[in-house]
Length: 395
Image (cartoon, rainbow, N blue to C red):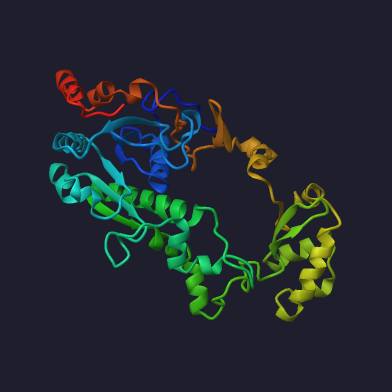
């Protein structure tokens, strides 16, 4: 299966399993834009609604690199005006999914809460993503990935024994517990709508989504197989055979040979004393085993170890940088990274056998003009001109 082709705009040539689906994305930062990008590249037509007076975000990007806006049409709309809210309601009447990531109550204050929108379009899927959920004592507080991981108990579990917790970028609560759970929710609701004809509201919370990702860890903890402290368990650097080690050139390799047969292959190639193989899970040997592995790994460079272990099941991998990962032979063979204009980025994922996807592209001029965007929703040209003269649209 080949990587998806480069797109020619937000709406031109849309293909994929969601082709024909229409989505409204209420503009924000972080996981909601990622969810919208993925829905767009699966074929959905996505309209991103931005504030008419929206300012540059904290980390603003040139258009060529701004994945928060690529693959969409853009409408800057003053939603504080009644006619702005009414226009959005009319657009929602012809939409399948609306996703938003505001604090609880914001959409309601704009007159665009789910009760109002679903009254106009009972088949709409209304996806809501927040840090803490739509209710509860923390629901109206601000936060970021690190905040939600702290409340989920996961930040406490990430890091080495005796060292502070380590933020795992913003990949766990924001993008995985947030964007991925939101997508799962709206697609499940779409399936239910195919049987009932009715839309519904999805309340996705990043604290809960991140917690769900850790469901197996909670099971291990309940069964007495996990210590509620970081750096002392099977998957958190507590074991010497699931950790990273420095190589002769100051780089690192990742070792993850948990299973005895994989560990035996690793020990043979390092080499490592067979007494460690016979007693892999004897915790009393782990300090000595860790020191022996560290001494052995320091004898070669990272890439030399990649040559030694690259075609084995020893579960040893070179720790690549973000830029190095793009050029790894496996990723090149799979076309796991693709170029879109000046941007080289991860290819859309997952892949589908029966539908090719369209790679998101920088919005064209037509994708950002209210007349062109609203015409797709059937709004009359004279009305669009009148609304424009009234100052409803931003530049």
